[in-house]
Structure formats: structure tokens, C-alpha cells
Length: 318
Image 1 (cartoon, rainbow, N blue to C red):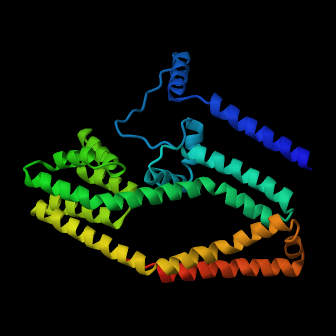
Image 2 (image 1 turned 90 degrees about the vertical axis):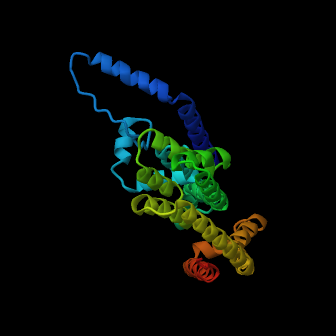
Image 3 (image 1 turned 120 degrees about the vertical axis):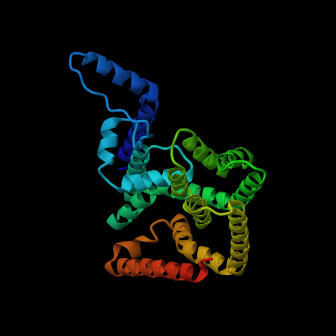
């Protein structure tokens, strides 16, 4: 059983390597499309063109058209944008399927239980999504820390007589990444003719945080109704600083509850792995017997409810 499994894993690894190094880049795909157009020169086909940026789910048209039928693929594309990465949605799904297959093979060789095979396959297949969520969390946290500084810089620029577009450009150059690159995209979209409202809505899609929602709402309201934008930005920056201070105090007061939640949530898995390493086959009595399997399922359900209860207690919205 071990030799066929190793053969399957080596074959899968070879397929991934060949696929990664033999796939066409953007230039090669454009050349192929151009050559296909020249070969069909007898038939005149009107070319549909647009100056707007098209959201792509895959570098190949058939895969993009297939994925575009599912609405959740665009939600995954938004997650990629919020994480600040340039991954293709098709690549994420492909690697998720590969990792799920590898996890299923490992679960079958190690446990031989159908339920645990599904669990290991789901856990390994969700690794790309988990990485995206982790990168998204890091980026949004960094943007929350940098946003008050950016708003104050915009306020000083407006007070000095600069226009709003120039203030956004100054923020894009003076504020470090990741927030600086986001404002740079807003400035470039405006320079290419996109309305300010659409550019700010795109920014809010990439950074879906309350602080950014405050800023975009203030800018749009001032543009539509008028008012002292410098005073609005000063008030917005002060609100952001106060929210950050209160949020820091809450994190200090809930540190013990959050640490307990991490320990309680991770201890069952750590003990299961340690017992499996120290006493191989020790868990078979629980997983293979009907009573033990029911106890295992009940424990997983109680563990999930416990984690949700602790998260509810330790989470305080500001």
C-alpha cells in the first residue's frame, strides 16, 4: 500500500512541476490569440473593446468563462485583492484541489477512516484560503495603523492649498505600504478618468474597514453637499485615534480570555498528534468502534460551540 501511494504522490508532484514551468505567460497568450486571429482573416469579426479594466479569474478565456458562472469566485477575487496578492482564482482552486487530494491520501494511509479522510482533505485543501485570510488580516491591521497618519497628511495638504487629488497623491508617496499603494491606485484611477466616487468605492472594496468607511463617507458627503473638508478630515482623524486607543485597551483587558481560547482550541489537536506519535494506533479504538466514533463526533461539536462562545465573550465591537 505504501509503494503505490508514494508513486501517486511522485506522479502528482511531477505533474505540478511540469504544469508550473510549461504554462504560458501573458505575452505568449497574447501572441497565440493574435496568430489565431490572423489565421481566421477570411472572416471579419468585430472586436469588442473597452477602456475599463476587466476583472480576470484566469489567464485563459475558457477557464475564466467557466469560473465566471459562479458568483463565489468573484468573492474569492475580492479576498485576493484584500490580501494584497496577485494570485489567479483558477490557481487558488487548482492548488486547493491538489492539496485536498494529498490530504485525502495521507488520511487514508494513516487513519483509514472515511470521516477523517474527509477532515484531512478539507483541512489541507483550505490551506490557500487560510493563507489569504492571514495575509488579509495582516494588511488590514497595517492599514488601520497607518490611516490616521494618512488622513492628517491629507488635512495638512488641503490646509496648505493643495487640491484633493494632489493630497491623495502626497499620501501615496509619503505613507508607506500597504496603505500608500492603495492610495496610489486611487490617484491613478482618477488620472485615467474614473470618477472619485468609483475610485473610493474600489478602495473600500480592497480595505473593508470601519475607519476607511468613515473616510470615504466624509469625502463623498463633502463633495456632494460642500463644507469645510479640512475640519471634516481633522474630526475623522481624531475619531480614528480614539477608536484605536479604545481598541488597544480592550485587547489588553481581553488578553487572558483570548489566550485561554487559543489554548483550549489547540490542545485537543496537540494531544491527538502527540498520542498518535507516542502510541501509534492508540486512537484506532476510538475511531473504529461505533461508540468511540459517536463520542468523537460529540466532542468535536462541543469543541466548536465552546470556541464560538469564548469568541463571543472576548469580542467587543468599538
